[in-house]
Amino acid sequence: MEKPNITIEIFNKRVIYVRFKGSYVAFRKNSRKLFNQLFSFATENNLITPGETKVLTIYHDNPFITDEENLRTSVAMTIPNDVVINEINDINVMNICGKFGVGHFEISAMEYEAAWQYMYQEWLFKGEEKPRDSFPFELYVTEPPKRLKGKSFTDIFIPIEWCWIKSFMIKWLVTMITKFIERHFNESFCAFDFEECLDNFPKWNTHYKG
Image (cartoon, rainbow, N blue to C red; front, side):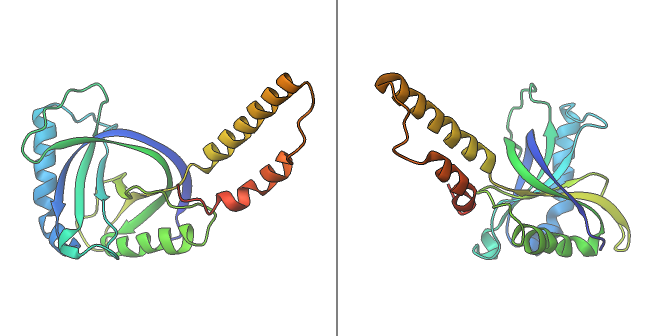
């Protein structure tokens, strides 16, 4: 497997999905049926837009802390934001949004596990980004290969924190407090060294889990 290009992206899409509960082995055995169910619904309701519709597999639970019979996995498809969907049977609707680290892979069916390990063990755990409490997913840029040695383009999305928003909000709050005190007390507020606080902000912000 070649080393992937990794980008930081904002993802904001509405999807329809079918959820499966059980081990990953059981999911793989049932995945064709699940995708057929998803595509049948999308076709009947004219939801597929060539060149725009994306297909995903979403992993809702951490396999290291969740019993395999309780693992939730969903097959999903992006849909336009303005489409009205009547949820029926196993077809549901949700929004996926947030900041993600995205690994752009060209891999075979046998290399998916190695790709996921790379994103977590080599990129996330050894880098500066911090995981966000949300679910990761695969987005299939091209159709997954039907043969074991065939390759396709797949993007792996890892949810990460919005650290820049926290930094912006603290700086904004400091500015507002300083202006308020100067306006009401007619003197520069220097009882607390805000600049030193902000200089240290990135150090403790990276450990924040809120």
